[in-house]
Length: 138
View 1: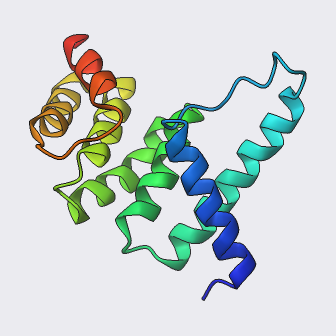
View 2: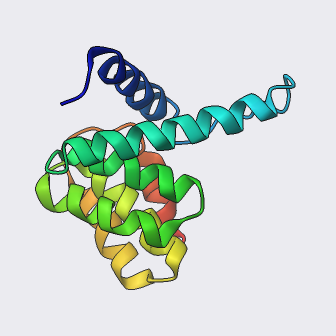
């Protein structure tokens, strides 16, 4: 079981990660590039711990998988993103993330399938426009 501090820190990681749309901030402009790398490593570590503590929770799998994708470690992210989409098939963001990972590994057919699932959802999600662009680019 996670202690209170770790749980709070993970919650912050997830909120910040999702608020950025999974995109790391560009700290180079304000001279904090090293800080960014340390923070990204910390987010990765916390996400790994959280996923290991709650492997059945789709949000933990999605967060860890998406962090791998952002780190250009697509193959490592795929099992986590697949698990998230399988456990919460109605969540379009999980299908969008999985589609992006498949696209980046060169699996255009699976990428198209997952992105179409994301776009077919009636549920609003903040990356709908990015999902549409990714789908159009296939």
